Length: 64
Image 1: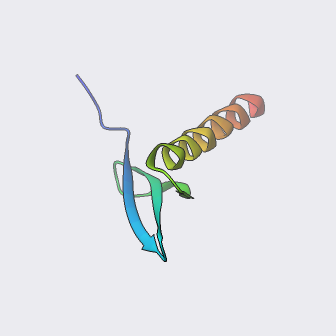
Image 2 (image 1 turned 60 degrees about the horizontal axis):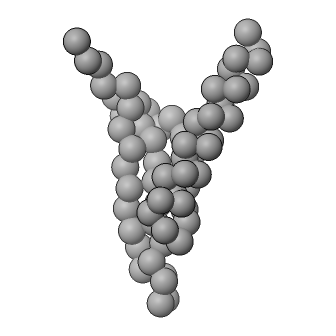
């Protein structure tokens, strides 16, 4: 059985002559889990969100 833990939403916005990609993580209930991450490429925006998730996991593990 699988359970949906979170959703990553990705969007793109044109700013001048550049596209800015944004990635954000939401819990299954819609609660915002991680801050909006903006970058010049889709993969970089996703990498930023993943790094934030890693930092939060480390902080949680260190607090235990």
